[in-house]
Length: 405
Image (cartoon, rainbow, N blue to C red; front, side, top):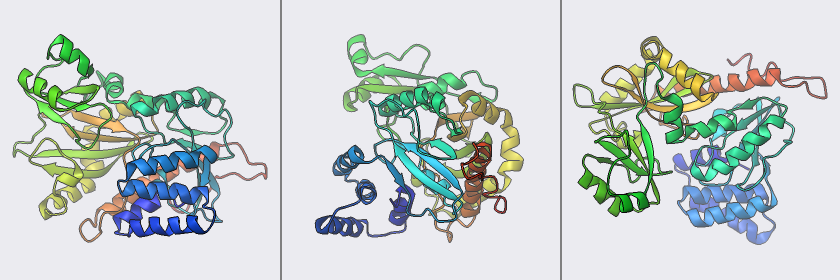
């Protein structure tokens, strides 16, 4: 298959995804469609926001085939990477093929579906990456993989037992009391409990709080609640079975601006991936107006340039605690600096997209920074491959990137 990264990149660069879908459908009319091509079509449909037919097609493909390789795999690849994923939309799994876009790696995907026992044996590989990201729907898959992982005989990046810690409530529990960290309290509450028991906040929380339905991201249905009347109105207006309620902290700077950072931890080492600046607490990179504001981009470039020398020393203990307590080899953290100087954590998981697709004419500083992240991840994979069992032909993947990293 082309794979998620190749198709996401094509869509980002303006390719006509509808034409690509039509081309594949024409192939299907004139002959048998290979499973990998059909799975690519499902990904294209997801990129076109045609979710229902995309997931239906994906499910049909996975009934007959679970093991795929990338078309980009070249003949010189010496490190075999098996990526374990599950069915779902583009947020269900880590898009690992962005991180491993290097001819030294042979990337294969193995799908595991909810309700199945985790595979006791895996296809031949040097390193396994569990790319299933946390979501309520993915909990059964991660639990099954955690049980099966004890029988796997090759190195594993992001053990499924640790990925399970990255729910919003699980992360708050894992990081509570960490030195240098401000991790807001999080509670889960059912709509029925509010309706039957009155519109009161769970114990330990006080106004203002943030409300959102469980398993939502990117600010969807996210609202700041300042009083009980607002809470009742939110419950009436936003239909969901269960909500997350998170303690809100004002992290605005003296100039009234809010700054949010996305940091990747690779084997505990932090890398800044982007910094968004906005005059509102709800920040996402796409709503911060970074592309329209040269001053914001200049500030982001400066933050990347001084990140290792200035930001990391201020929060070295906090980053170390995140790495130690989550146990994850690869983790993306959305964070800010609190008014008292601690690292304020919004969320952290393994599924956020890390890419190098931003236009160079606007962001000349970003591609070199992202390639540092890619190189660090590739080194993490290569170092584990070097410890992997020697292959039957007597070779080992010990020198994959010696001239690149």
